[in-house]
Structure formats: C-alpha cells, structure tokens
Image (cartoon, rainbow, N blue to C red; front, top):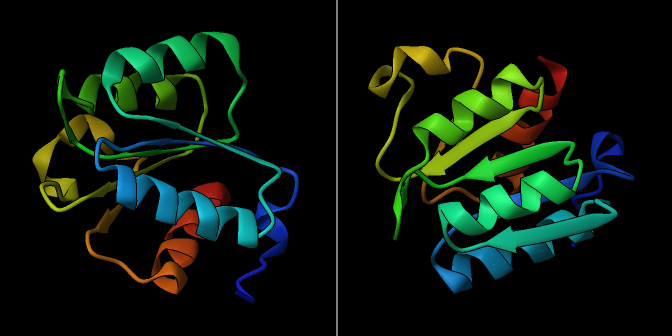
Length: 124
C-alpha cells in the first residue's frame, strides 16, 4: 500500500481490538508499513496473556472490550515503557488523567492518520 515508515520496520506490535474486521485491517496496514510481527487480541485477558509471553514494541488498544475497559492495561504498559496508542471511538485524552503518556487516535482513522499517530507514540 505504500505506507512504509522506517520507524515500523522490525517492530513487534499488539493490536487489542474486539472488532475482527478492524483488527485485521489494522494488522494488514501495519505489515504493509514494515512491522515484522503484528499480533491481535480480542479481549483484555488475551492481551494480558500475550504481553506476558512476548516483548511488544508498541500496543494499540481499543478502550471498550468484551471483558472490560483497557485503561489499567494502558497504564501498566506505560509503566513498562511500552508505547501505547488508544484507538477508540469512546476515548479522548480527557477520559483518564493517568494516561498522559498515551497517544489517542479516534475511530475511524485512515491508515495514514493511524501511522502518523503511531510514529508520534514511538517518538515519545
């Protein structure tokens, strides 16, 4: 698709998104942009299990998931110095003061918009 950005080359990224179509679309765009591995999780418990076994360079989180909201997970990731992009139609930076290190991207976002937000998160 021509979205390749040097900052994604070789990165391992986790997408936490319960809408399968959105998760697969994001995954495809990130692979096209050069990410070496992109995994998906449809629920908090699945995300937590993957984070326990894999070192991710970036995590993209939806806020509302079938088993709860991801604010606490975002805080945990930030405390581990893992860049986080909150990709949600239900959240803005004003939703949670604990997430000052998180970059927010409202849904829907074009692939180019999301990649710009990801680059901003990686630069923090």
